[in-house]
Length: 66
Image 1 (cartoon, rainbow, N blue to C red):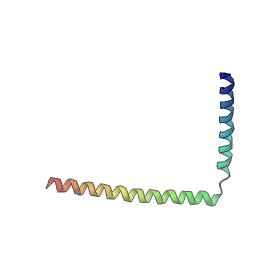
Image 2: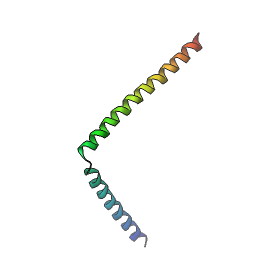
Image 3: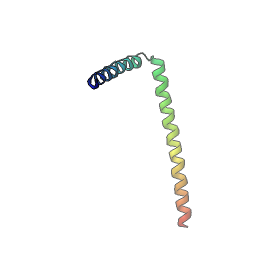
Image 4: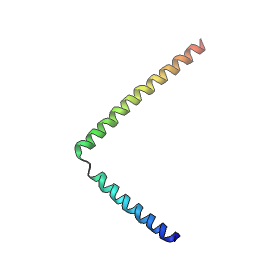
């Protein structure tokens, strides 16, 4: 029974992987472009937030030194 469950589990994983691969392939070009643009926007915002955090920490460090 254990071996049967393992075989069924492996078979199900293979089928799901194939289905997921074909579902990803069906994404249109405009959707891919929108996702790429959103990723760029997220990177820009993340960089700005990181800059603000670094500036705040530097200001705090300078105030402590004085």
